[in-house]
Image (cartoon, rainbow, N blue to C red; front, side, top):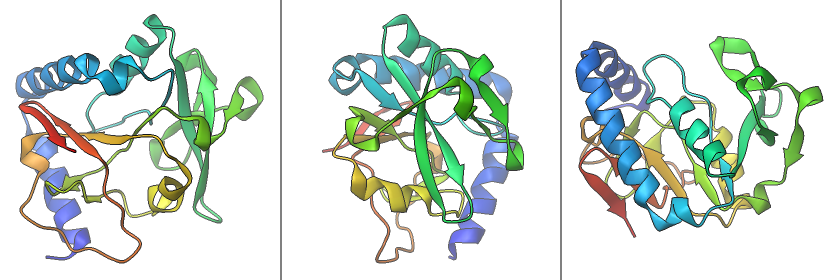
Length: 186
């Protein structure tokens, strides 16, 4: 199946999940994430701000602030499909850009070099058990991931894991998947 078809089908399934089930899955995902040594030992965390059908990252960001972690959110540059992380200390430092995505307001934040991340939480739509993912089709993370030595993980539901995905030479897997049932990865 083509990436676009897999992406569209999964987004539809996620949009159809009843809210009570979403809440239950998110709670389990977050409990597992916060127990991980990867989370506990990370001082600087790269993470996107979720929207729509995505699993809520705002609660994760707030937990990071409570634990005095540096939260770095990417700003995407569509002209060259690159991104730069900026530290946010408040949701007031975000603005809505294209496609309804919330990104840092550069003038109110300071940049964080990707090489300094201790943990990188990578968004995605469909995954396989090896950590390969289909994201939103922009290729931003495929360009950024080679620049970081930080462990990478994605937060997903078991529903989003398929037996295999079409892969291209530039595709890179994440190290771990955090699902409602446990941790998959090295």
